[in-house]
Length: 127
Image (cartoon, rainbow, N blue to C red):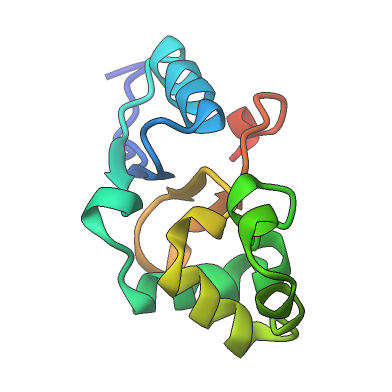
């Protein structure tokens, strides 16, 4: 048929914490755009280590680690200074998922998926 696409709709999974203001804005934006997505609350549903590893490989631990958030600021200075590389950041993020910058969005499935961190309506439509 003319005008009909046979392309499968992109799978979108938004990871975050339900009460996070940025996650709420991102979900509202996706809803307004009519984009279907799955929401994974890693505070309630957990965060599989292999998923964190995928994110770290895709965007880097420095981008994932939220050094401006409340969870980071509440850490004792020794815990903060102990985060010096991917391994130490990974350990902290698995122990305290609230220190991960949100939302993390996986656009697509498998090896072809694009991972973004944070919410920016100006760049999301191009993902």
